[in-house]
Image (cartoon, rainbow, N blue to C red; front, side, top):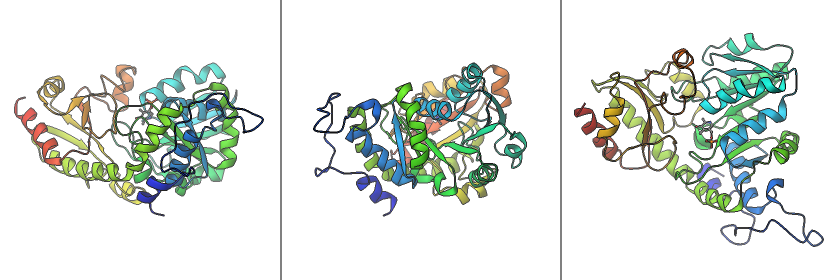
Length: 371
Ligand SMILES: *Cc1c(COP(=O)(O)O)cnc(C)c1O
């Protein structure tokens, strides 16, 4: 089945069209298998896991109460004292802080590499490396990492590979088909898509899922049935939403590139993007997030002039939102760290919604005029 159909039908096991919310945390264990949220066997959890797994062409997965719960559980399940992890330096802010502050407590070392440099990962691998972790397109500069090259390196060296696939969503990119072992999502973003819940998903092989499960069970970050129900509903329109967001973002990026008050536009769909060819080879669509540089010190004033687009930290919703990464997602990084990863105070990240693109353009245009 094609992805639009999988969004609607994959994982549905009940006779009813939607999975009734299974709210009980206690079941008669003599008559029925022992159903319990932390064990990830609640029907509502399973529908969401199976839908995302089907879209990503993975065998199985786990569901979490946030993207960070999925990411931290996956990493902690894999590494042990003495191990080493290679990650790309352009990481979601929370992941960056996690590896710096938490991994050392477990005696795990790590190396951050420039993900766009083809030989960077190979050079960083050591005999103790257990995991290579990437995030593409990256937040917020939309840099592209060569997924297949990382997957091949992992296979050659027998090192597990993981990707944070949040920005692409399962509609635009299926890293498991390119050989990546673990695909992670903050489902708070595109999969949820309506800025009304927090969730995370991990999809992988059944063998690896079973290896990670005991850690997930003990760390306890599973998702409740009611939020799973909302996610099940959201997933049915994921392809529709993301395809519209891809189209809107492409039109906006092309237009913004011509605007005089905008210094630089970052969007993998643009031919001016340094990894556009690579993006085309591994993505079906370029996603709904784009970033641009606006004349220094004007971002706050620009935001205040917008009438429809709200400054908001999250992304991937049906509504267009805007933020300054230096003030939000990357605020916890030191100014030097921010400079090193190229996040200036004048950088703006736009998460494009499903509105009519003309209305998004009008709002940006009138705000630009007044600065
Ligand atoms: C938001 C986000 C996360 C963290 O997800 P939460 O649901 O907020 O815990 C991780 N990675 C990326 C790329 C994100 O955008």
